[in-house]
Amino acid sequence: MEPNNPSLRSFIDVPEHHPFPIQNLPYGVFYRKGSGEFPRVGVAIGDYVLDLSVLEDHGLFEGTPVHGSNVFHSSSLNEFMAMGRDAWRSARQRISELLRDQPGELRDNPELFGKAFVKSEDVELILPVEVGDYTDFYASRHHAFNVGTMFRGPENALMPNWLHLPVGYHGRASSVIVSGVDIHRPVGQTLPAGESSPVFGPSKRLDYEFEMGFFVGPGNKIGEPIPINKTTEHIFGLVIVNDWSARDIQAWEYRPLGPFLAKNFATSISPWVVTLDALEPFATDMDAQDPLPLEYLQGERRTFDIVLETYLQTEKMDKPDRIMVSNFKNLYWSMEQMLAHHSVTGCNMQTGDLLASGTISGPEKESRACLLEMTWKGEEPVKLSSGESRKFLEDGDTVIMTAYCVGNGYRIGFGEVRVKIMPAHT
Ligand code: MN
Image (tube, rainbow, N blue to C red; front, side, top):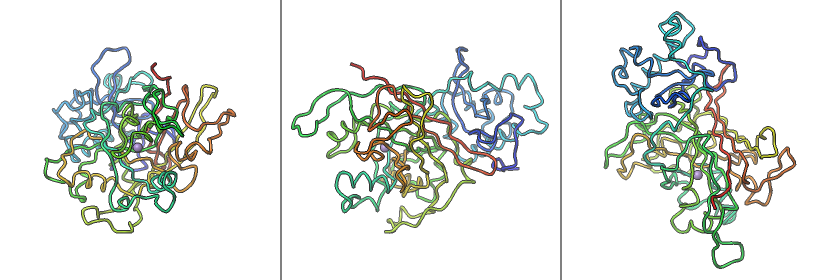
């Protein structure tokens, strides 16, 4: 039976709405808390992490390209990601078989069982990938139109290039951090309204952006673009991305070269990488583009039905409010188009590169995926159940992002990105 079959059940108990059933098998990097052990690769299954380095040591990947490679004894997924689709598929098949509720080498071996499974609460998850380069796109038409309307009016909302290419910028890889690492409000230069000289201090307009990002598996040689019909061979899997943005710093610095310090202080990602193979049952066609883009951007128009939610909890609240619901389907440009466009010059993509989608806003107000857009530059604050309201984020606020696909009787979840805003360093 193939690993996406909805009827598969694991001997590890997984409740119906849990993000990590046997059909998911997302990869992460972890170590047992307090153990001092070297980080290793695992997959999430229910409330457990399965230590793949233990399975590797027991020869359970024999007959797959992973056997003897030591890729699961690594402190990042990069070596595994570089192996390519055949290795990913055979590893996924083997892990799925070992976790099924049927007689097998893992289920029926108590000693191995005890060594290979760790409760999720007993592990520390680290950044799963050594991020090479980070690129951020701007691929939601709703987001680009709303932001353009705010600053230029609806007639000139989309720049003339927007419908012809996936607009993007090269971001900062060193500050990509894993969920749970709290961030400090950035300081910088801003131009107060009505003034002609800038001032220095903590950002007053700190914002999140709900995005999804994908990791490049095998790269391409410099000078050899990835054709659009080959792009899926280069995409390993997806994570949730929170592209933290200081709007007041951005407004002053961005002309003419685009975002710089407004976005380089932190970009948070979810710790579990959900593979393209696990998302396959949730693939869906995208609408045809009008105008038709140039030939190198024409290919299968495919996306995934992934529900995206943002929650906000202030220090006065006992539990968070859901303030946004959107869907990955709301993107105008596909991941395949992003990768084909990025490499068309011959730019060499490398294993571990992170390509993020841009803010994934939809047509409804509740689907506006950043506060700039949701509050319309702060003119319409978000009201919270505590009686408080927010134009932008305040110190002590916690932003939680989650994403999941809804299957028949199960979910393919991404877990979450949870980050608290700490005061600026002064
Ligand atoms: Mn962004």
